[in-house]
Image 1 (cartoon, rainbow, N blue to C red):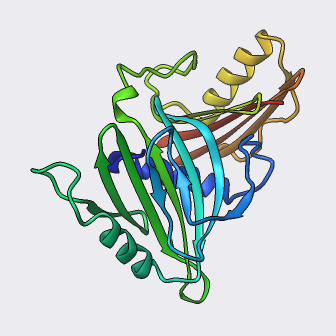
Image 2: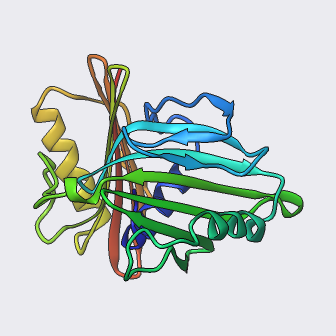
Length: 244
């Protein structure tokens, strides 16, 4: 599951998931009501009574970490959700360790538990009329060994902030967030020339506003969109790649 150091990455992911739809993250998304969520071939992750759980991804790869993610919504408050997991996880999984850890990041309240070989995370925030919205995640940290972003070309000096991949029912998708010191225009032309050389067709043009740009391309059953933004003298990019 996502451990606390991935909190920012999951926040970015959740923002993209709740943003404009065509960011075709080809993740299965079927709403269900259920008392238990099955982890990655392991123990069950309990869910508060009455909570609605939506499967976001059965087979995600977040920064090299195999992960399952569910969306959670409940009429209960975030504090009530956290209290539920404090009760569920009060007994330590290991004799010398705590039953759970809590943290706060980017407006999210986060509670997590390590129960080898699994790591569980719940992050919630307040929604309308005191209700809760959040995410559940389950992963196996020991599966993360010397992860390096796979096959992602980037301009010199770039830093990968998030690398998320999915493969659900034959539909593949990938989201990569990065930043560098290059201009938005330089980033735009780097990826435009890179993908055109590989046979991709451009569907967009560089915006007149050099602080933002959008690159859209397709090739066969594949689509790529890259959003570029200039913030505090750094350029940020979010690439979404999907195949039907």
